[in-house]
Image (cartoon, rainbow over all chains, first blue to last red; front, side, top):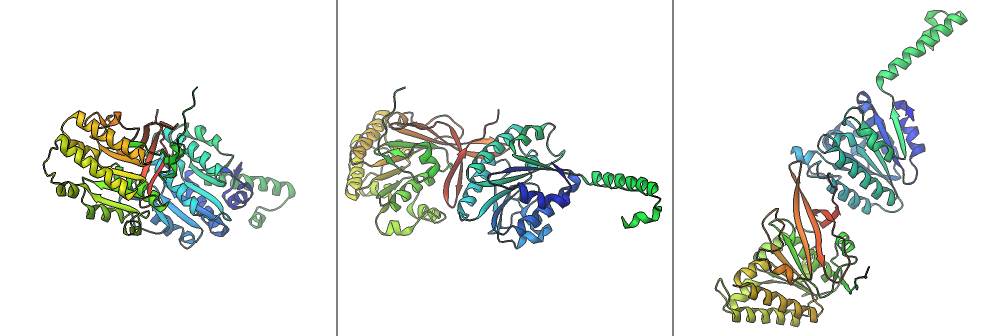
Length: 221
Length: 245
């Protein structure tokens, strides 16, 4: 389904059901806004445990940019890139994997952290993003990783939400992995937003002309 | 296909490894834990002993390569280690070099008689302490002192046979050069062992992925698939290795 970014939180609350795997395709120019929306959704979802796996940005940067998550007690992090970049600041809420190439270690850490979660909590994993892993790994390896993770996660009653940033991965990569998700949400790009807005204005102008409304009246619409 | 007779098992306490071994190492087996330096042989063996001790099974760790103070200092980094197990006598850490010194075996190379005397001492210790789990770290360092292949074969065979009679499960660490497909330095240890657990590593994107593979284990069905291994303060964890085509 293709949605506007403002509808993301509502959509998520309806599609996150038992053992669901959800893929979110994000145009590069809406990445920041999408992650912000997701952070708000996570923050408000206090009855659930969230595991935020970051490949795109270091944990420190995420916490700095998404202040809301810095105090959220229901979130823990796995940072796949800071250790390799030598920018680790130890923190009780974040596990630092040695390198984004050690994908099995990511799986092991996920399993270990999920085991700690009390059974009365819903468990969710957010991968930010699978396409960023293609920078460090072969495409086939990531596909296998995603298959393995999806199978493990769904058998342990956990929801998996995976971000795919458009044009970040190699050509054809999305087609290989998207179908593994039970649900795919496509976020409209800001350019489309603008085009849609323009389209609406034109439609309204035509409507206005037909109804004999002056151009200035458009402002209130 | 003929079903392998499944023997009573000694759980390693590493869940994924026990899963690979369909429940654990058959009790009384002598298993070679093979790998190059830093691959996690000692950690695996210690976790095996300590998990057993926590379940009330007495164990003994014979070190030849590392002094005891260094060994315990390293152990303190692991959450699974509990000094109480040593203090209470459920887990024994023994420096084999000190025993050899006390026996007057100070030479670099042992005679047949020296080897026999050492074997008797090891058997006596295992018997007296009533241990159910035993580790020698490393059999390579011990074999270095045994001058011929016959002596090595005789030593390991007799030790393993005796320990099996008292239902003691044994791990012998074997040092091999990095990235080689050999299971022992002297080419004899693997033939008299009941099992081989191979710890290795493989390069991926310039990083080293630790791996574990159960190559052989008499008395149980097991997978021979390669697993990725991680060593954390919690100990060893495993996950199926992702394969690149």
